[in-house]
Image (cartoon, rainbow, N blue to C red; front, top):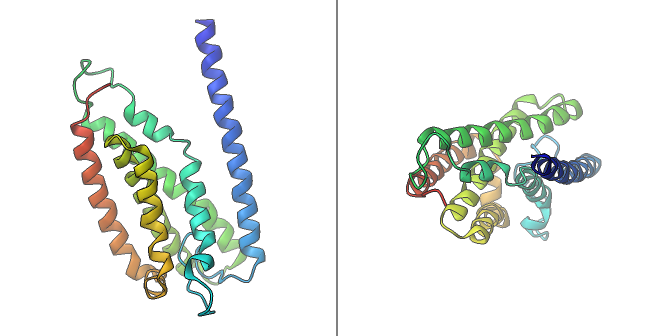
Length: 216
């Protein structure tokens, strides 16, 4: 029993240390974003149209890419670990309950909202005249982060964790390399319905795979 408690404490401390490191990187990224001549009226997690046509769109949008990458990394796959954990209210080798899945879904939604809300508070403190635009951008960014986490989870449930991460990276990075798409998506009223639809579709796929996945 003492060994188990020590092991749990060691795992927790290791994750806490990694999360602290990632939070430090997030703080550095925030400082760089607000100290550089970016358009601060656009939320940090949103694609930013470039004023320089000679500059590649992906290079212009490294901050949103870094923001989403840190958002994914900060979870340390704990929601995914929860989804994969046995549901002790059902028999072994039986599918996990739907409630188990929706608890996971609620967790990643709340996490995504909180992650973006903290950045929103900082952004509003810096640019208090763009509250509505920043809020809509934060909401869309929360949907995007939820979508990326679901895509990664789909890969895990399909038995291809690396493929899930590659799919999430491609899903976010590819659109920001196309200037017309960046200009369109950077307007939250355009991107919000699309993101909501994609999250709904990804949720359905994840639930379908989850319902067919037995306890290992």
